[in-house]
Length: 125
Image (cartoon, rainbow, N blue to C red; front, side, top):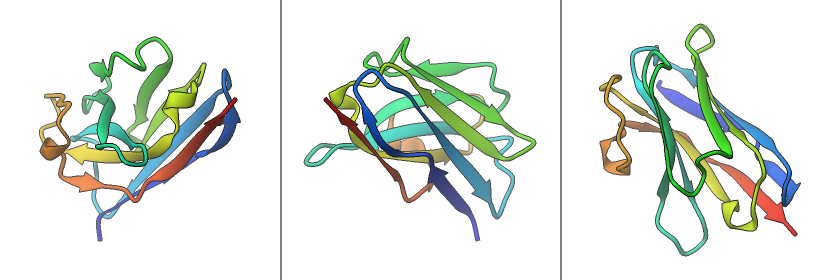
């Protein structure tokens, strides 16, 4: 059974940091591109960041560029999202996703093939 399991969410004050992890199991994702998305209440799920299979190429939403960093460890079948200088508007459920064309990075959620269940990130003032 293919699974993506996110962890590391929680409550943090504005300006603080969190690191999310996404552990994959059931198949190897080392040839897939991986992405992070988020969904706030009443809003559409939106793209946050993506990383190619090798880790050599990354893509970010403008709203998080310079504050968030996506990385991966293929030996551990895990992708990370380091989030710094968090803002109130970063509050959302964060999802990781796998996209089988590992060398092309997409912003569209419709291009991703596997999804995790999400982890809540809440930023307080």
